[in-house]
Image 1 (cartoon, helix red, strand yellow):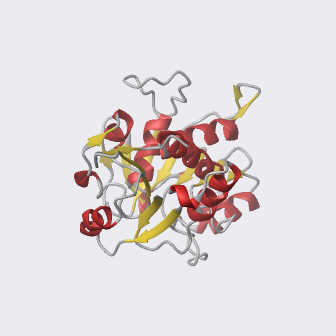
Image 2 (tube, rainbow, N blue to C red):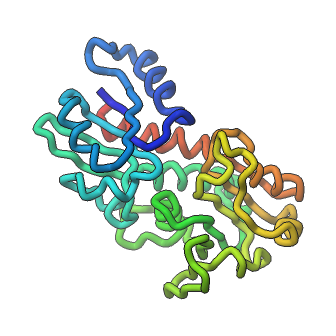
Length: 266
């Protein structure tokens, strides 16, 4: 058995995706190839879930448990350890639970398709990451030069974060964490939303830059939204209206899901 843990899962694509994948591969539910959604009110319910479902062999993890689940695991893959967030868990027959981060893989491969043409980058500039959660940390590692990872294709894009949880700019050395009120959008050309702002059903939400800031976006900008439902968020619509290139999170989702399936041996 496989599944997804999170708090609110009505928006999830994972159940249909993996159910269809199992069917295409001829993997029978009678052999344990089923994918279920497990809504956990609190992460402390994780151990109970594992005990009550001894046939579980793999889990995906979504908001808000990508960081919170780590203390409940036995091992961490090096990338997941560096990112500090887990979105995929492999459960061995002896109960050993190992955490991985395939968001990193999915984001990196999809971004390369977004900003490269014929192996040449069409993007020049700096990135601004909206949010500082688990998904944001995966984006961070994908953008920067990962010297201690076996990573041949390196994006090596400089970046800063913007966060609603800070009131003054925090200098972290290689990057800054900036409050929304102090963002100068003209310093960046790649805007990446890693927050759930704009996700169904709250489709009227978007990263709260002022209308003046959005008005400065032009065709030289790239807007990437990790949200995939709806297909075009208000964040992307605002960018497209100014001529920016846009991408939603669906291709990243497919990439991370395929990487998870590989980890599970599917």
